[in-house]
Length: 519
Image (cartoon, rainbow, N blue to C red; front, side, top):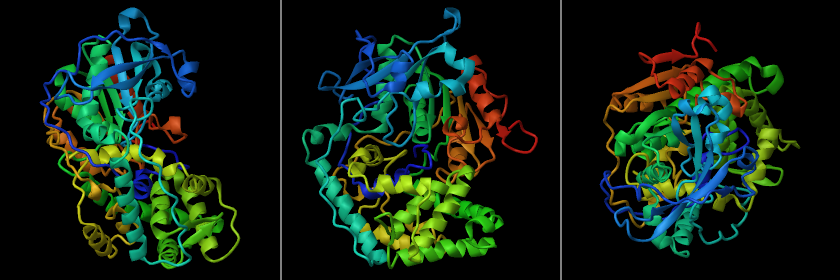
């Protein structure tokens, strides 16, 4: 999952509203060279859209890589790359630092630069390298046929009608991506292992013996893939908020159900203590009942706010987005209050968070702008993707069974969150096997309800050279939280900055964000 601000929607919304594209990849040994050792790169001003990079004096270029690494002399594609040169003393330069912001499907041309203030003096020692993964952003793109206008949902619905509509949308998007332009040639190569190969091609093109890296959420999993494919080229690697390498993507979504419900319990306690402000209930049970009543009503009659009709699946996505971080508790309370008022027929002026979400949902560009996540969630056969049932009825049965124990989020995490059921090909390349002693610094929030803590522990056990920094907070993404206006964890931030600056991992796993720790 990509780390996002509360005014945007998460990958769950992305994949519910858009479809997927058929993909497969030919087997490629991890030892295959990532292209020529050095390319003649042409550095130039970054595109006008990259205002942050231009303001920082960055230069941009394109690295040429094979479309298919099993055919290195065959067709090629371009990877957009940016560089902000190291500013420290030449003798202290460490090399290059790449990053990935998650998603999957997140563009990253300016992401590493955006980390600079959080990296403090460690940033001075690296050329800060950003890149857009293959087929995204300013790299060689994948473009699907325009989405047809969808009929406005009627005033009444049922859970089954909502589900059937999501199936139709997913099937249609799979078709319009599969059959459009040159996609049949490009899409088989949208895999995380190929992105890791592209990262190593960037390293080689820049003439660097190693690359250092920071990745968050899906970006953390991508970094772990790189350490398995290119262990001798891995420099200082930081993995923030990762997942279980033995699980499929569908299993990872399902496993988030229980932590999401527990997070809702925590928020309900907070809202009950602030009942005078939000009027959702004076006890946690009453607050939870208010949420359930809102969802139950929307499964019969969608809630209309500012002309946007919100059915129960969309409401669950809104709730999931706002439950990720403790700092969002007031925004979630005001959003539920506004939605409950609208459901009761009262005139509602939505708060800023809900208003921003409504604007996004009403945007005609939403579906096409969010296709990147589907490409990589469905393009891989195993971790960090894959495992999606082919029969839509499997999702429906799982959704209905989940309502007993996970009444709010069960139908969401068990549903057709990604439209991969309609892939016509699967990757021929096996999932990445994880298990070596490459030194890695891992970060994880103990109460992460997006990628649960147990998944990070599973990856930590496989990466025997890793150290795990645990932050005892409800959050998704631990390092540099102040960059998003969230409460920082100075203990975790110090561990990252110290490692990237000095190359020293903590002597043992580290607990941060607890009483007595510097926060």
